[in-house]
Length: 75
Image (cartoon, helix red, strand yellow):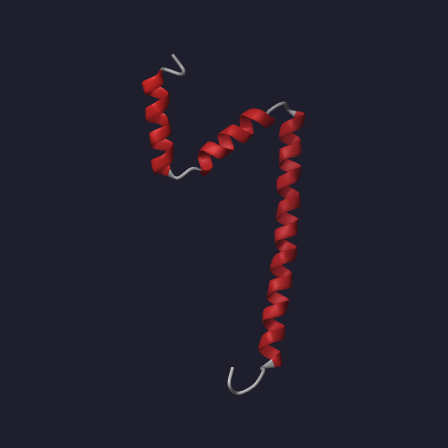
């Protein structure tokens, strides 16, 4: 910024960052609430495992499927 500080632009950016941080905190609170609901229904362990598998890249999930079949884990 060779022409000096543009305070208006900085304030706009700061406001956006603060708003997004607040939204992120609200979303995190909602996620915790859903995990607590899952726990109350007895799904925590299974749901966490299913969630971790669904978060995997498709190619990693495919490799996992190949290993599960090759090892006969669910036969």
